[in-house]
Image (tube, rainbow, N blue to C red; front, side, top):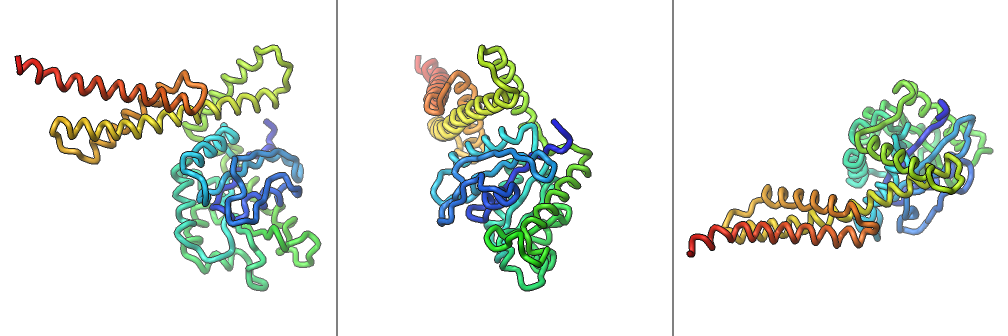
Length: 332
């Protein structure tokens, strides 16, 4: 990969303008923008273009607070995001609006910690949208100083803040600061600086490294096929297969955890033991582990869920059978 290549992941709540930001960075309409109250981005989308001498891949993610989709569906798209940015992104862009801040903004940061880690903030830059709402001659730095939450977040992100306005700030405006073209140039310089501070590296963790290893394995399999594909096409196919496989195994793990907790609760009660939170959590983890591995041979999420259910049910039956054996012996 060339030194100028950059992988950028855009994160933020529903409707804040993530897809519009991606389009502004590229200077063309590549990402779907929905101006309704529902989230415009239903699926993770990645696009690669050359911008100011850099080959940039932008990964646009579904809103963390979609108004009409279940959490499990969102998790599958986060898996797709992780697959797209493997072995790791050079930068995270945390998108916030120039507006009042609520608990939703804090929840976005909590989600970043959950899916990545607090370490990810060392690679993050805050990008504000709706810059037209700034007071006249007010900079984004002035705005940040007036809010303690954003001030603290900016410190964790190395003080890196930028602002754009996808609707009103046209490139022909006389005020250079209120100009998307100028702000994108400054944003890309900031990303270059972050990459330089991290010695040319990118954010990664065990999860991203494991995904990249799986991608490399799939690439080797695809190369052995009779198809004549470019390296880029081979990697795209490999990423698709890995993303699908991980989603299938997650379906198995989720089903296993649910049934594990349910049967763990019932079995504990059946033997007259105290039903504690720790006991149920342990049962859920055991069930999740069993479901994850039971789904290994599944080729769809539905089959994974069924195989996980069979595995957990069998384990529950075996446990109940073992518990009943001493009582049978005592009755003879």
